[in-house]
Amino acid sequence: MKSLLEQQAQLLDSLDRGAQAQRLNQISSVLSVVLVVIGVQTVLVNSWSNALLVVLAMLVVMAGARLNARGATDAAVVLVLSTMTALVSTSLWISQGLYSGALLGYPVILIVAGMVSRVRFFVALLLFMLAFVVLLTCAALFGWQTFAPLPMGLGRMVNVSSILLVCACAVWILANDLRQTMQRLQLEILRVKASEASFTHLARHDALTNLPNRLQAVDHMEQAIGWARQYQRRAALLFLDLDNFKTINDSLGHAAGDQLLKDVAERLRGAVGERDTVSRQGGDEFLIVLADVPDLDAISVVANHVLNAMVQPFNLKGMQIVSSVSIGVALYPDDGADFSVLLKHADQAMYQAKAAGRNVCRFFDARMNADTLERLSLESGLREALIQQQFVLHYQPIVDIHSGRLLAAEALIRWQHPQRGMLGPDTFIPVAESSGLIVEIGEWVLNEACRQMMAWRAAGLPAFVVSVNLSSVQFRRGNLEALVASALQRFGLPGDCLELELTESLLLQDSEGFIATLYQLKALGVRLSIDDFGTGYSNLSYLQRFRVDKLKIDKSFVRKLQGSPQDQAIVSAIIQMAKSLHLLTTAEGIEDDSTRRLLAQLGCDQGQGYWFARPLQASDFAVFALQGWRVEALATE
Image (cartoon, rainbow, N blue to C red; front, side, top):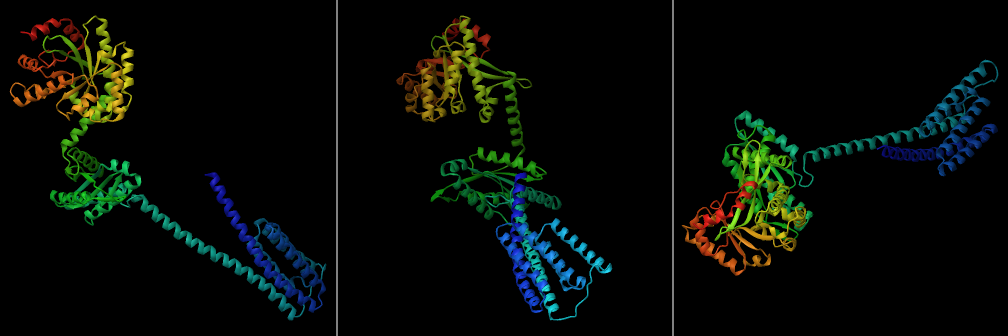
């Protein structure tokens, strides 16, 4: 900041010196002409002493002009004005003293000094002139010098007129400088006012779309609330979010994304009334403030106008791009009494519109707020649970469906909540996935399951496999293979004692990175199974390509197996397909022996469900594993 001010000061000083040099040139030119006229007059009247002074003055003016041309303006000013003061003073002393017309030269010199010289030099000249006037007066009073006025004549007229001409020129130059300065000042004032107006506009409008920004939207919403409160009416705040904007922005570039936002802004302006306000919240989010809302139907009409306007294709880079918006609506006074509350509720309603399939409008209701608070509470609690080690693993046996022999244990996470007790995964896993905490939780589950398996093996339990569920979020992080390898190495386990359960939707990614991760996991000796098979996008090609080992038949088919020929046909088809691909099958959700027997007849290999055992704590599972003969006895009754 200091260097900037110094640069500005240097620039102003440079400009001032340039103007100073220009004024000195102008005055020197006029002074040269005047000195020539005075010189001629002194020669004509045979005043050789004054003529000599004029010649000296002309030489000094020429020397000053040369110094000025070389850039030594200050030196030129001092030389010219000092010499002119000395010559005028000499003329006064040798001629008429204070009666002389040359006395008019003093004010002219002071005027010029005020225009082109420094303050100190100006003051020095003034003090010298005052002192010399005192000297002339004392000389006359004490008889040191005799001064007598000469009669009026042509010479005096020429001298006085010449001095007045120089004075007039100096005054005109000074007045012209003042006039130009005033004009520049007026222009600067206009420029500052224009800048202030521009800054005010930018402070209250979005730079890209020129729509009112959030600050102005707040003002308009508060005005609408005040009007609605006075006349017992309603006001509405609509929260709009573009659907799939990120995809368009990433694929076509930011320039195309900016153009889309501008086009959206224009359509939104045309879809609302003159009293309503369209505002850009930021990113791909917009707000609409509706004042004087008679009923909900009026809001629905506006929302439908907006939705219809948005579905029309946009022309971007010569392509027809189709987009849409999701709209959330909050009403005053129903959903809030100020902007911040209405904005929060409209935002929640907008996310409900997203969840409903997008390109729709949803009105806020209290249940949305309760759901949001519940989600936030769970998310906060999950972070605390990781720190406080509130998670535990229960293990559900997976057995041979024919003999009852223990084959595996599926690790199922539970949350020992300090207030709500033991919570199952269906309560908190969706929140963990949406918040990204599933990565840390999944890593904990993997390490804890491997640690427990190490403890069981050390205790001499029969050999079996521990099965761990994986989330798609863990795959997207890109370091899953390293985490699995680290857990196996840390607890001294071979890869074939760990089974990872994947969902069908996860396999649909079919990317090079995903396939490489699966192959790396297989290289570790880890087994792969597809969980809840039959509920997603079942595809035979990926079963071979991804080298999975087992299919887990979803419990929704198993539970209805006895009374549903369709489900029985589906399960039979899954089992036969798995056998043809040399894959094992595990039926989930077996709750009675008749279902177990039917599955065994259909050729299913493994079973899991309450008929064998509920999910058990690690200590109880150890007892179960050591008493496996009871499972066999139960299964063959």
